[in-house]
Image 1: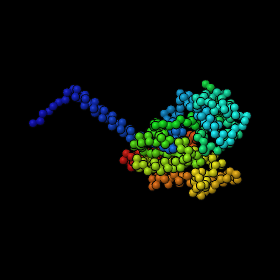
Image 2: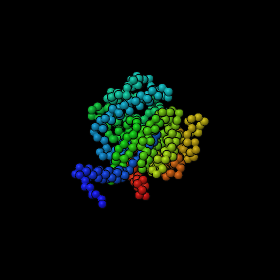
Image 3: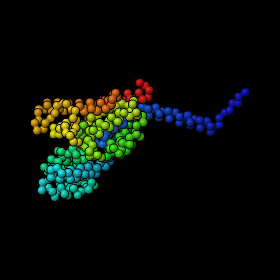
Image 4: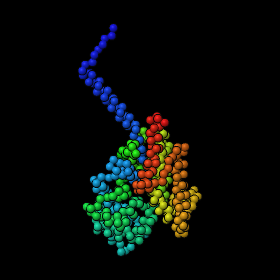
Length: 374
């Protein structure tokens, strides 16, 4: 005959607490499974972090940046301008020297530290140096100089005058989007897109950061790989002998081959389309040579000769055919894996909003597959 043993009051309370915890854990797990995890990958300088900031503007909790965040970006923007101008000015000696009339100002600027605040006096010197014919010639042929393309935006008269406004200057969205802070490690943030929750991971793109990516691979529903298509004539920050386009293509192939992404959606952003379009008018896309300057040697489409330019329709044909060549080049690296490709301009908020909304179904489908619903 069994013995019926009743629970004490303490045991009843403990059992109730355990049941409550288990119920909450189940609820938390279900909610976690509904969150779509996106991993943002790409080589350094591809525009990943700009895309991440666009997500904050479009889908973030604050729908943009707080006043405090904007104020904190002011010294970053000043440092970006100073360091890039110093690099550019130092490079003129090996390309097109500055005029004798501007040598003193150039010398002053080159002596600035990256913490130099940009007031109206400094801005005036920067503008004078920027407009120097030697500086402009060097800038136009900057493929092997490690400078940000954003410098041209910052150095427009209306922008540098605003940026040098002292206490009254508060960085706007474009100032922040074009700023550069090298990503180290993993940055994570949650977003809500049309009622669905997402978490995006942004990781360092430089070679020495890639070993850290492994920590973000677990349970990722979709990968967004960002490739800067305007960098076809540029070399790496870390390796001056390695072409940036070749590096990005190699990296994309490696990413597609990883077992962690076997069931993840693969989305390819061919980024910086605005800069690509601009560069095509002056820098040959295809170069056949015996040395390391050769690039895109198997491209068989239309070409643009800056010394003998054609019509706008001719240029559009060149733009579309070079863009299509790059899309096929990247997609070929994926083998049989399906790749969803979009041409993007990460500094264009409207462009990114439309494309990310179009990608939403891909993200959600990957989540359903991962949870066994498809």
